[in-house]
Length: 219
Image 1 (spheres, helix red, strand yellow):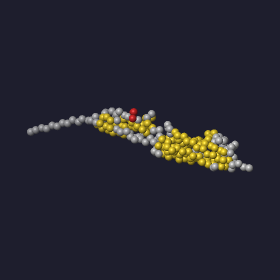
Image 2 (cartoon, helix red, strand yellow; image 1 turned 90 degrees about the horizontal axis):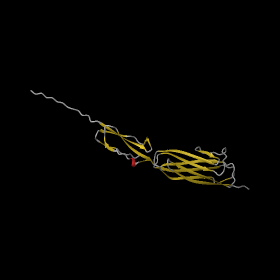
Image 3 (cartoon, helix red, strand yellow; image 1 turned 120 degrees about the vertical axis):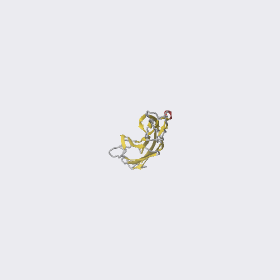
Image 4 (cartoon, one colour; image 1 turned 30 degrees about the vertical axis):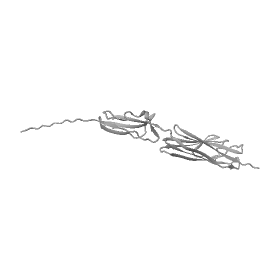
């Protein structure tokens, strides 16, 4: 005759959670990428990694000390901080073209302004601003501006375009068409200057060009 008895005990090993977040320097509410979350048994090792994020650079001075460690009962947050790149404005060009001559001081000056450039290593808003400085006051009732252009004064027109850049090597290539009648021309040569600005958050480049139109004389 024999009697057998058995018993067992159960030990629960708790799990911990680690979440890596990727935020913008100075604006940490702006998450630049999705969180990376992992779970593991308390006491086991974990490892997190930085990400390559277009338009941003990892701030090494703020590299998280807890990028590696062990899981704990308490949730762990690993914060990677990135600074926004200033960006590069490559090959900015402005070109103003129109008639070489016009028959009368009351004639229409038809011309176009071309502005272009390439944005590199940048993400966010970009503004193209073209300023057309005129030698004489404009007859606004007889003149026609491109839809993107407005009068700042009788002698200044500004054309603007805005872009939301989300990819590298973003190309700006715009043409603004204008038809101008001046109120009074006192010189046989009409020269007006155009200036373009490509404006990023902390960076901008300016280019200038001019055109000359001869007003023909009568006898």
